Length: 147
Ligand SMILES: C[S@@+](CC[C@H](N)C(=O)[O-])C[C@H]1O[C@@H](n2cnc3c(N)ncnc32)[C@H](O)[C@@H]1O
Image 1 (spheres, rainbow, N blue to C red):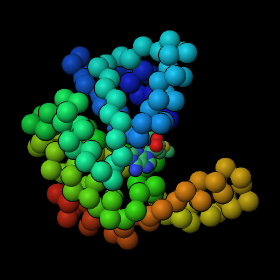
Image 2: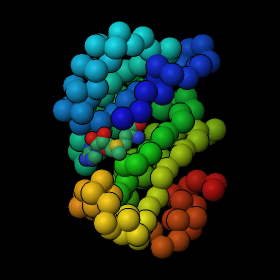
Image 3: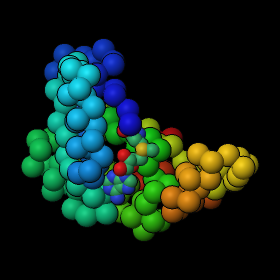
Image 4: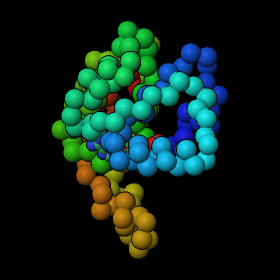
């Protein structure tokens, strides 16, 4: 779990949407309360499954697709099936005004398999659902991003 909203200096007026399923967001909220953490920007949590209608939930939470957005999908895509990854990225593209940016982590199973003996890596490997596309640059170009 990242705490970017709490640990970084944000330009005035930044609105940060954290999209995740309800359970981890609830757990995170309890830890943040315990730590009396104070967000350093406007932070809005959006509990939704990214395989469902998350654009609707994001819009209802106040995201404005007419403004450029910075998207961060860090340590996320490997947990989604390939069709859900494709749909996620297509929907992100549709909600990205000119000037938007995106950061992704893309991984291959080989990365964790190298650490097969390690318990934590073994547990991560067991949750691994999809592989990154063979040609990530071509894939992102096809989705309208300049890599
Ligand atoms: C390794 S963590 C990455 C956390 C993230 N980088 C952050 O800064 O908080 C993977 C996250 O993906 C979320 N996730 C996995 N599948 C999801 C789905 N179908 N819909 C929404 N979130 C999902 C998990 O709940 C978890 O919080």
